[in-house]
Image 1 (tube, rainbow, N blue to C red):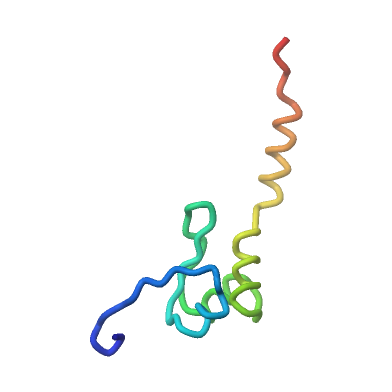
Image 2 (tube, rainbow, N blue to C red):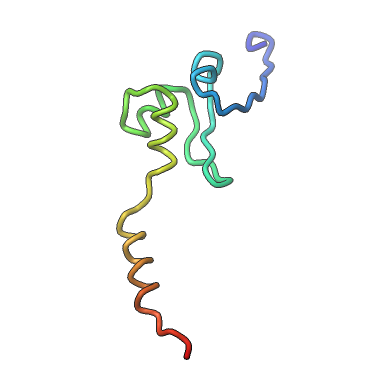
Length: 82
């Protein structure tokens, strides 16, 4: 297919299979693209040489800790309605 300029869209949660059959991947989290590329690019983005399953976990759990802390502080600081 690749030699003929064709592509196959394959979706799966079985990431060990995806790792073996896909040339390029897109990682989605909560409906948004968080990373795309081949496995080497995803590993580089995650900062890990792990398998795709672990890379996925790293990419989808990463959150800016300062932004999360500020959101928690903002929630606590809001006056409650009486």
